[in-house]
Length: 340
Ligand SMILES: C[S@@+](CC[C@H](N)C(=O)[O-])C[C@H]1O[C@@H](n2cnc3c(N)ncnc32)[C@H](O)[C@@H]1O
Image (tube, rainbow, N blue to C red):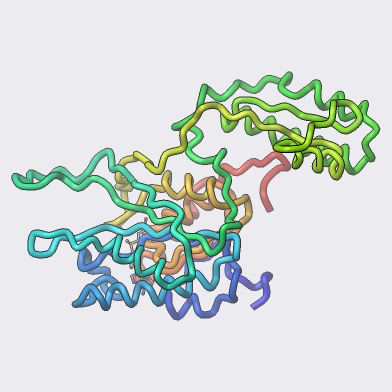
């Protein structure tokens, strides 16, 4: 299958293991998904109702290996799972899965990001606490995974309020680029990079920046600055981003969503998917959710200008997910206009 015929922005109805086998190797940048939890709900068909935990884990692992196959070498996989009690004891299903996944030797586990539910189902247990968290496991295929830490949890962790749009940020550098002796192409690239970094300041992703332009600014020394020296020689400019003191923690705190009119019983928050899209993908990247359910992943992708492929075995869920996506406005306005 060539890139041009890859199904994108589509929710396909069917068994995910059959559907994913039609995809070529290395064609999606991120798989993010929430498989049915072990023996928790009856979705009518598909996974989750295996009699034995080992069978459930085997089935999930089979699909996981296919997901690894279709992810690009610099891509990521994010799997969200919930736990279950049996004979008054937690089964530790998510962790059994994570261990089995790493033991395939195909992936590294970068983080177990904890979703803290602000509004867990109120239950009155006398002898245990109310469970109010779930892990999102972040796996990668290589150490060269794409990672945009500056874009993660910006609104929650911003070091200070995003600056109001001021036309002055970086204005001096545009003038310096014009005055420089750089070739036209290098000037064009410098202006684009400058626009990009100004946006990061406006969004509160970074506290500020400095730009150095060849011929106008003193050359950095070697050592830690060696990379910048090379950029200056090769590109004609370099940008130094100034980060605040924000600590990016492996926790996302957000409420469980219940969406009016949606029949699906296990919806995960669009906000969490959005944060992983910011962290692990670029605009226009392709994202796969093999258990798309009510379409939360597709909604987040549409909002942030990522392409999505979704699968679900239940035709009713596919239909309502498509409707939900159609009703979602696209908020993507990049520096260079709408993403294609
Ligand atoms: C936990 S839900 C996903 C919920 C989704 N994250 C959301 O926010 O709506 C799991 C979904 O997997 C689907 N499913 C189960 N087995 C499947 C299979 N073999 N192939 C495709 N979908 C399957 C179920 O119908 C269910 O909608």
